[in-house]
Length: 266
Image: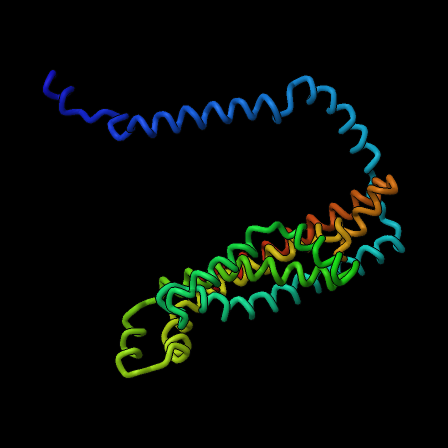
């Protein structure tokens, strides 16, 4: 029995003092943060009646034909923003990802510059991009389209580059051996190998673009979000509930469509 106990590995055998200190520090940070920013039971109890009252004022949703028509126009604009922005972003992501991909880029170590550029686009939140474009090109759908385009480049640029780096090396080596150029290797070996991954990432980007485009109107970048902001600003809560339900249906439908497309591809 003693031998078995000695042979049994300790569950904490891999825990070094550094790891222990890091875990304790992280736990202390979480507990401290919860005390500062997490809602207290008293705040939840105080806010619950107000939430119930707000929901009561949002029901029933507004179903007036004139309002539904206006919402439909805004939804169409939202789809246009998402589709055009995502399409342009996906197309631009391909050459940017090629220049950023390690071992595939024709720039050698210069690929770090483009990888940092993609990381920068991805780091800045889409609402911040929307504010920047609203300030430069003005209110409306153009600012929203440019925001989705930049956001898509940040998203697809990373995953496209990673897919290119993970592409099968043997076809690339064969083309390199016969003196093929980098662009020929990309077109003849890399892209055919990663086509399913590119399609998958593009569908995710389109789904993400639809979700993002519904809130860009909150900062004046067009779409249904602008109608939602007006409804809340004017305390038209029945209008707001209708818009929220429409957004839910649109996003859910988009997820179902992209899921089916991904299932067919796989």
